[in-house]
Length: 101
Image (cartoon, rainbow, N blue to C red; front, side, top):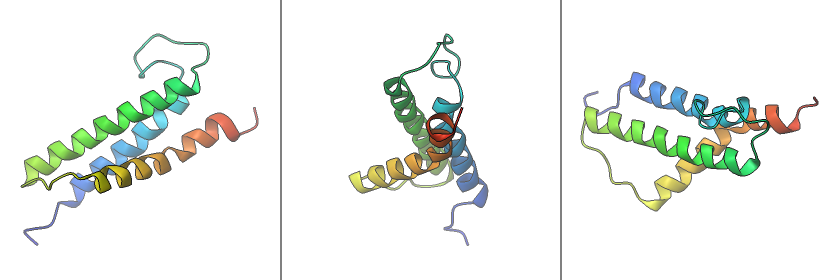
């Protein structure tokens, strides 16, 4: 069991990804701490989503480096990571755009 990543590290990254993926859809502030806006456009929400995806990926990379030798990041990993992050953002998207007001 020495070569396995601890379960807590995976849980931290997945929980951070779940929270970060839904942040753009549940508040009207720019990047959570910015000025409050009346209604953010879809472009702002997508930009925030990409920035949060990059931040969570950096947290995961830092944990991986701390726990052992990091693996190389190729385009396949980035594509899968973006798909997972978009999937995790689905509840926030449904709450913001598809529910009846």
